[in-house]
Length: 101
Image 1 (cartoon, one colour):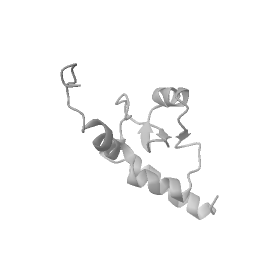
Image 2 (cartoon, rainbow, N blue to C red):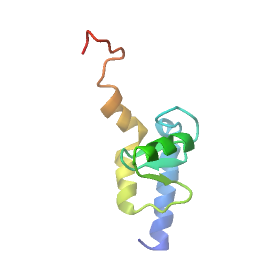
Image 3 (cartoon, rainbow, N blue to C red):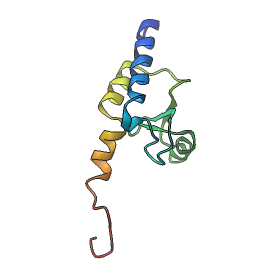
């Protein structure tokens, strides 16, 4: 792990990312104020949904209780809820039926 200064810098960056509009809500259920990061997808998620991610063996870190490496912070800066939605949700039609499959 890095120095105390690096840890503080990383925490400040993550707090800033949490303030961005797409990251203010859980990516899964839209509840306000997610406090966890799913490192499989680099998204912000709430307590309830973080438990579900863990059931799928996804790695989840608490923003307030965990230390993030500089590499993890960079990945989160490149990811986040908006990027994940653009990559995974929007490419699919809004209404999928048997005839569209």
